[in-house]
Length: 297
Ligand SMILES: Nc1ncnc2c1ncn2[C@@H]1O[C@H](COP(=O)(O)OP(=O)(O)OP(=O)(O)O)[C@@H](O)[C@H]1O
Image: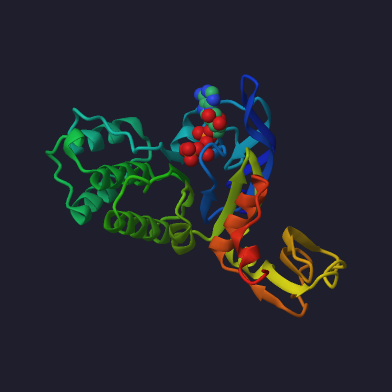
């Protein structure tokens, strides 16, 4: 099955005159853990809420697992959504949450839910309002997974967690994905986490997608090139300049090689994921990326 897990075409969402998402055209393949990164206000939550069917586009289209989001009960059952701050019902116990999940979800996997509770050490009798941030996140992950969805969507699942809780949450997530035939879309500000768990990346800034693709392909295709001023004016076809810095004598470029063939230019060196993400985020804000200046001056 090659149906993309999410396909958007010129997707736009406005709040009054304010564009939260502009002209987003994306195909996200199934079976991946997809990281959505971008600064505050970039439009990440808006994209996730559109995918979950919580809000409707102003223009353009979005298909999730081949259908319009939240089109019917069957579509709702195929998508698990955990909003920012992992909302749970404070007055209900952990066990109440699982009972509720079982009543509301036709594909509920009670065995998986019970097993997860044992693994995470969550006390079934404890009220959710008394759980720590990490425990709430684990409960939310358990509820989303026991739905047995085809796609799990998480809006900044680890933002409030300490490093240990974050690691344990992400470890659980990776185990789920390995065990279940599920795709995951998560937003995060933490590029190191994205690098550890994700295999596909979407960079969003200023309401637009800056770049998207498999992380291995993206990191293999982005380079930093330093050369004498003027020597880099003509680049091979398919090599796009993402950012540039010039001194009197020297030019430094960050390039995206979309040509397919390996980049064969003297002075070209690969850049890591974090530098690549920061370069796009700086570019979107009209700023020079720090990596340009490391040896340029
Ligand atoms: N209900 C709303 N009404 C008006 N403006 C909104 C609404 N929701 C979001 N916005 C605006 O849309 C833009 C995108 O917001 P969004 O929450 O999608 O960003 P984000 O990338 O998730 O940010 P963060 O990382 O801070 O969570 C922001 O400028 C925000 O102020």
